[in-house]
Image (cartoon, rainbow, N blue to C red; front, side, top):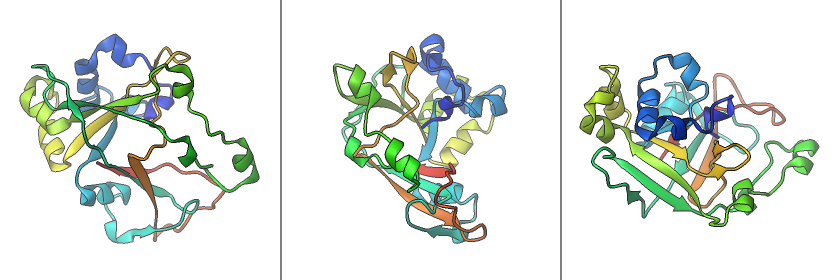
Length: 216
């Protein structure tokens, strides 16, 4: 899920355009308000950087564990056949289509309520004729390097280069939302690893926390 679920506007990109939306994420005027409801996920193509952010900079403190005991996550996407969107003002931007797999859906905890309440249903597939999911990928460094006008902050370009940063946002249109979904559904293209910080210990398996790094 992107942070758009925190009262973000599903139609923001439709209203403001892709380029303006990318600019708002990379160099937001009000970081606190924007990042709490951003429709973009930031991720990296370097595993060590994902480990760094997943562990709050304490990589040696990061411990792998079984599902339902974790406090931190690393999501790994394995993508091929991405299609470059060819426009002079869209350098470094790609589209990707894929199929979901509802058989991979799992409850958030082994609590009887979660086990009985979770459904293996895809809202988008239920509504869409195409049955193909999609998202857009942005190589943040290439995009900023070729479009310097979007660097509101002098550190934007150097930070994107340092972090090998990419952006991703789902482009599944949901009629109920009148805009794009915040969900990247379960699929064979991505997997998740479960971690906790040794200094804080494992979580109660019936409680849910959200924190993670993402690697392409």
